[in-house]
Length: 290
Image (cartoon, rainbow, N blue to C red):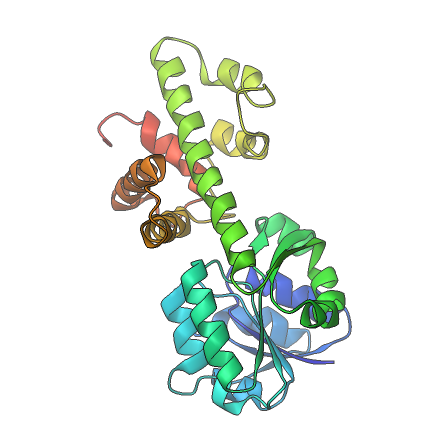
């Protein structure tokens, strides 16, 4: 099958690789061609623009950083929407806000393009193993048509409802991830200030009823203070901003989210933006950062 894939960052390159390994012909685009090299070596065709990708395929996956980047790839100069054949399918795996998803779904529909929002839960390791979770919004028939490809990249395909519902669920999940990581890090900061060793705290807290289960997967990073990014902190800040905006759009004030957003903002200013979001622990436990 001829498949287009646009956006080859930490997650996208691994997702695209799994599609390629499954025998599909892949046409890819990324603003930095460096990130496409490993896929090219395995047989993918790199194109010079999103529009060129669309000329060869009937389905395009996008895995991009933020709404403006998605909008530019789809509707900007050399965007792919104008070159897609009517009836083609666009699957957006990006983490964006629900109101944005609904707008682009409507714009795609006006061009005769079917649209699915399919953001993913999971970091680089599940992406590499094809073990992501997809939260899906869109027409059920379109979802079933796309399911075999989603199952190459993920182990769970959860249908949430119409367009925007997949993005909505992902926003809730990332809001909770952002808050839980800060809460845990603040608890660590207090414990260490009271003379409890980091090692003792990490032996007791992860896996206990008071700590989010995903923290166990971050334990080694905190012990070694090796914050090689699985999910860069700057993108968690972006998701907090989008959640805050969505709260205002729906007349819900997200008190904790807005506070946590400011913590991640300070961490970015202190140079943690490119590190894994678990590095907020290091930010909160280093004197002079706040």
